Length: 158
Image (cartoon, rainbow, N blue to C red; front, side, top):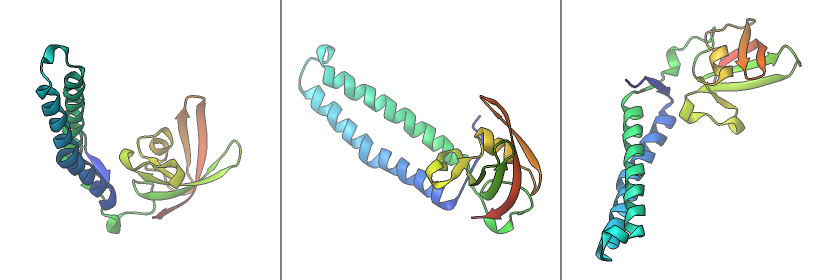
C-alpha cells in the first residue's frame, strides 16, 4: 500500500540513478566481499562474513524501498498547473504574521527537499499548511511550539 509521490523530472531521474548505482555497483561489491569472506574458512566465527551479509540485507531493503517509491512516482506536469493555489512545485512567498518575517519557499516532494535551496517538502508542517491556499489567505501551520500563522503573499512557478 504505497502512496503516490510527485516528482520533477530531475528528482525522479536522481532516484533512478541512485537505484542503478545500488544494483550495478554496490550489490556486486557486497557479493564480492561475501565471496572473499567465505573463502577464509569457518563461517560460524567469521566476522567479515557476518558484516557483509548484514550489509547485503540492508542494501536489499533499500533497493526494495526505492523500487516501490519509483513504481508509485508520478512526474508533475508544470505546464497545466494553476498558479492561483499552492500545489507541489509552487514557489510561495509567505509572511509570518507573528514576527513579520518574509520567506520564499518552493514546495517539492519529500526526497527533493533541501532547506538550503529553499525547497521544503509538501509533507512538512509548513508544506501541509500551505497546500491548497490562495494568495492573501492565512495558513495556520501546526508546529511543535504551537500554531504559526503565515500570510500567502505570492504564488508562482519555479
